[in-house]
Image 1 (cartoon, rainbow, N blue to C red):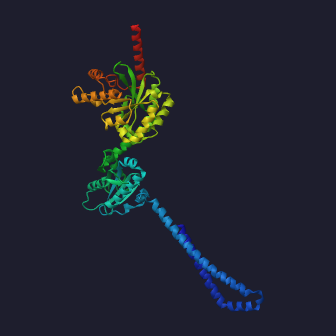
Image 2 (cartoon, rainbow, N blue to C red):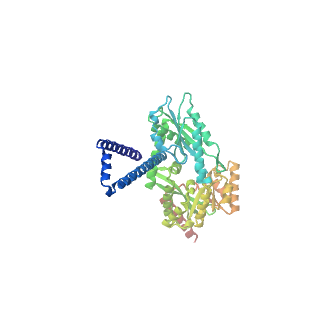
Image 3 (tube, one colour):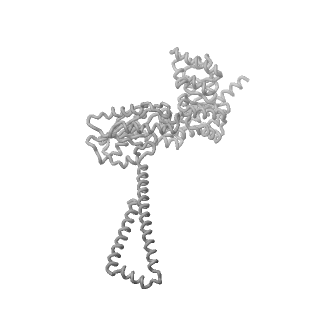
Amino acid sequence: MRLPGMLKNRVMREALLLLAIGVLLLVFGTRIQFHERLDRFLHAHEEWQLDEIFTAFNIVGVFGLIYAWRRILDLKREIARRNRAEENIDWLAHHDPLTLLPNRRALEKAGLAGKQPAHGYAVYSIDLDGFKRVNDLVGHHGGDLLLKEVAHRLNTLFTGALPYRLGGDEFLLIAERHPGMDCLRFGHKILRCLSAPYDVGGMTSEIGASIGFALYPEDSADFNDAVHCADVAMYVAKKSGRNSVFAFEKIMEDRVMRRAETEMALKRAIRNDSIVPYYQPLIDLRSGEIRGFEALARWEAGPNHIIPPSDFIELAEDAGLIVELSERLLRAACRDAMAWPDSIRLAFNISPIQLSDRQMGLRIMNVLMETGLPPQRLEIEITETALVRDMDSATAILGELQAAGIKIALDDFGTGYSSLSQLSKFRFDKIKIDRSFVTGFETDKKREDIVRAILGLGQGLGISTTAEGIEEDHQLDFLKSIGCDFGQGYLFGKPVSADETRQLLEHRGSAASAMDSSAA
């Protein structure tokens, strides 16, 4: 029972008690002729002024009754105010204050499982695509306006459907099914509705959505589990790309479970330092000398079982593990590089997600200070996709790194977005020609022309160039003939462990010493 209700009941009991006492006194006074006896007593003792005192008590009693009545009215108003406050608190506990939609707690208490309609429910799990980009562009106030509009569209989309905001840019829509309802088509209707342009503070913005749906009770006899099934389908839709609608299938859950197991294994591998840097040499094409090594992640899952980065880097990004993984790999690579000659540089790739982290520059500098590697020996490689992802953050981070003396290389040049635009906005120390242009240029004149154009651009801007994927002698000869500065590929060596890298450097050093001795 609520406290205001208890107070109200107590007041009523006390009022009834006083009324009962008053009635008993009235009956008792009538039987004993109380007033007549009191009147005779007052006249008999006039010198005591008892009648005036009695009159004063009567007046005080009347005012006391008036005061008590006013207090009762005040108490009733206080009880009403507290009731409204409790109702507001209860409403806030079950609703999202921004969009005014019911929240996850309201969903858990909805009890829809006990209200099964004749044809069941379709449960749609909705995750907005591109909301963060819009939020960064128009600010948090604009993002809030967009979320309110999303809620309004979901509210007016389908009569009888129940929308919920589960948090962030995640929504849920529960629609009562009817005969002939095409749930997949309805999912695409939701998608079209949410993908239409938004007017956010005078700016036109567009977002997409990934939608998964499950049928209750067909996909699960438990309603909460049906919501989970819709989430699984939404997750699969999100992995397939923007603006997708997927119906739940049993095989999806198995796939998600396998991914969850792989994610747990990846977490353990990161904590146990089972993911280590391997090193591929970077060769000066004019002298043939090793000028550096590129650190490439390898997951040592067991004896003779090496997992390439293409199998786990994306998972690490999705699971939010890429920052920890990258920091551990950089620390290990810097420690290894301290054992190399001072003239040998370390090249290290960073994920596009990391360029959205304003603390990334500080993290890199902390690693360099901890390991003792001079900033001038570190070369950070970034892709064009990373630059486009968050231009302002990338500008700030790259400026900090270059100010510290760290070199910046633009990786996979020509395969991203607006390559020339990136060269005009940022200052790079090196551009790397993607292997897709190097491989097969001898049979494709267009690729050869592109390679020549990139090298000419680099020479004109005073930026050194590195060609990736060199595997044949004729590729090397051609690149040297047109002025490419550096190269890497299987022709010079595959990525190898830190121990093998040291042995390679020692062998090269011994060979160079032997040549100098023979020349002398």
